[in-house]
Length: 296
Image (cartoon, rainbow, N blue to C red; front, side, top):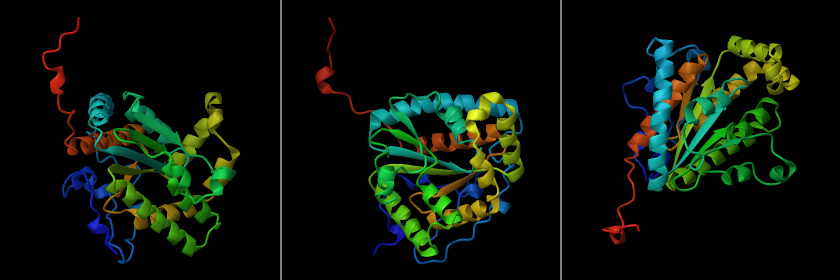
């Protein structure tokens, strides 16, 4: 059986992996080889209020987000025309972590022809009748497309784990299924960028309170959010486990300190931009039949 590091990717690994130097490196979960003990991941050591991509000036950072969003529009057009690759962006995080805000802040300037978003909810009865990845596979991007997952297949190793609906053995099996599934996607041209939006408990409390206090945000609030908040520590442990077990050479995890909404958007926009640039994108060659053609 091939080792994980033997995965044959049709794109440069630099599109996925942080370099030895730079702000990105400290926030990417180091992949572990098959058969080796899972790395220990401590979210407590990864401070949610950190700003490794920030210039130190909020206004300047906001301007940078806008500039990169404009740049992404051009890169996405080239990506769509190139059609050698697909891009899957996974946004995962606790309630109020900023998944919706990331979609608006990073991808709002791109064309809806080539960028699509799926917001994953609890599976329907029909979806539960299949394996847990069945519904996911139907929504992965096609050639030249970018798909943004607002929540994702990782919900199936979070909610069931915290609520003890599945056993540790079943959880380990799902980790393996996810790794193999993402390997299939990567080896067939899908660049997978996985972002865990990391906020602190106090920050979540403040954001939930804002939803209660602002009538225009009541639609975002569910009483069930309070029950889930009581499980904060359990969810943190579940996240630590999945980050350790599913950060692979073909789909590594990136933890995004997200207490600052501006920094969150800046970090993700920067990584997406740099990933697209690393793909050496190009327009298709000119068609000789069009040489000299004049439209009457």
